[in-house]
Image 1 (cartoon, rainbow, N blue to C red):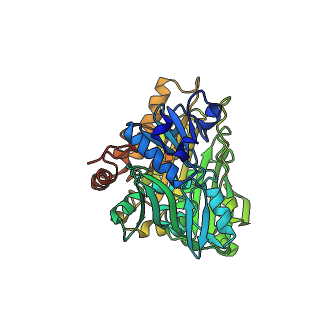
Image 2: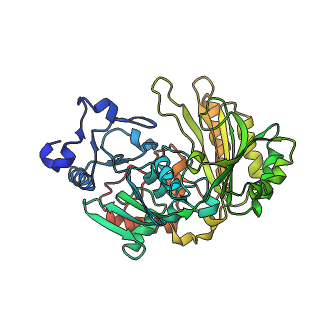
Image 3: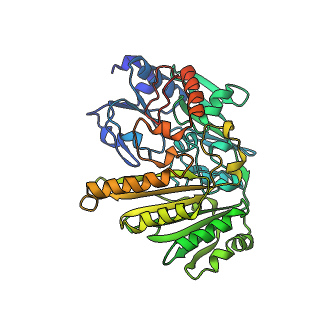
Length: 441
């Protein structure tokens, strides 16, 4: 890789194996990568230079923002680190967010303006990857997906050009960015329409014993709950840092009315299996979790399972999900309520699948040596496949898989065809293929 092949700004941030910064530069939030080279972009011009070089040399590009994606661990190619493009500015309810920003930083800025955006669950997750994949956040019923709040973007194309996008300019590309992933270029700035947020109420409820009747009650509660309320059921082992060990329900109310939140959850609070751990006002940024960074001395094990967007949370789905967790000590199960604003969006309006889903379900077994043999692994895959078959689609942001067929599982044929046409226009040589890839039509 010749320095002459890149612009001056990008050259100053080009890092190769053997360079003093290599070991630190190839570490990302969830692991350690082994690309051919890394460029740390500090400007949009750096991004353009890097993309032109990669396209000219036929190098696949991995775009790294928050660094939670499994794609950052693939060997070879060029890793384009845009973490320095992290500015957040507010103009009324219009929020401009750099493509390398993380949601914790965005929430901290918005809180000072009395605003909120339905983002992800975790403070260190990148705005870019989560939004482009849809973004099922903790206020999804109040305001929809992160992508539903996206009103514009600045994007560097596969040819290195910088384009401004909104619904009136490059409208089909704008459609694709709302759920089609990082297939179409490097988004260097996201423009969101935020919402007035006077406060947040958060509740944590513990569950003892059989979770099935609790989930049946939760289903009934959410069937006609105010859209300010979004709930998440989790059952995790002690080894999982994502939540307290055991079964619980975490609820977020987009607003400051503790009484209204308590009234909505009253049927759950009345159950003998449910205990109230916390219930009250919480600063908006504090609803986001803080995931530990990758520890090479104690890496996370593999994961055998998946996720599904479920239209009807019937007793069969509940039983299969709870049984999956009960039969495997080192496993996790999760449900998040959808509906509300999520379901207000017409299916054809964005690339995100399954707008008729009312719940998001996830389960998986941790592939720990000595705990899962080949038969147990196959059984977990079989049990999860039976749950996924009851869903209406899958959510790409909640998988660690880098398998090539995942995009075909995510998008129905008509959506995939439309995405492939957009891909053909904006990235015909598939420079941006290190993602849930849409192949150019």
